[in-house]
Image 1: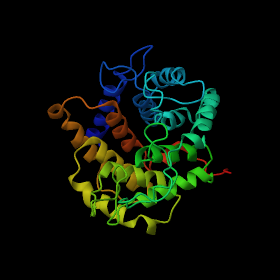
Image 2: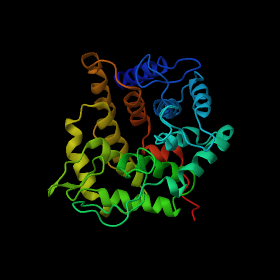
Image 3: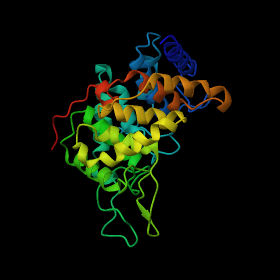
Image 4: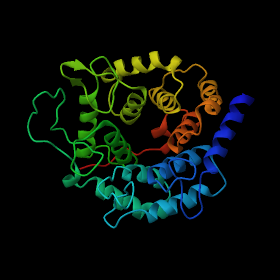
Length: 301
């Protein structure tokens, strides 16, 4: 256990040293402020129980990045790319000082005019394009990752019963591949079923844990089980561990697996902030990310 404890401390140190006073966290060391990287770093620092005060400073910087209408964009130069908004909600969750920014961000997410929906069936599409979900940019086609983020944000805000949360569940189940798993959100192209990815599958399963019966996702769980022994990429391994734990799966030496991936960092070079944060979350969230956040499923309209 000493080795794994050492790995966690190493990860924490790597993450905290990326924080720049008055700026926040960038995607990589020395990079410009990124609200998504900052939100993930906050979640990881809280999960670890960091006492450095970095998480509090990062929250304030994240709040400064919020627009008047509640959105949190990738950058002020790209206001249509509002997909970090649900991540900011997760980062502000549980801190009363940020109830107002969180409320405004939630209101923005629930603005139906911002949810991309194509009217009617589209030739050649294998999934239902009329189901409402969240896109990467304003009024575009909805995809798995931004929809999963939004669903998790609605859950922590007690809006799991909201009609748009229910639509998000429908969309994720609709985009699930027949053989199990998810990718970015494409199912069949030119008559061929597409391949799943561990990171998209882990994210989808984490977002749906506790909302749908296991029978609805059993093939996706089986896919992750088969992939886990060979995973070495930090993001893939972290999402897989988080998802399987969220579904109460028993894992074989997850902390040792994280330590092995950490040892490969010397060969691969610096990881992005998202990957570092996810590894820390995987190491500390024993029942998945949503359980760690203490989500509330009540409410809705």
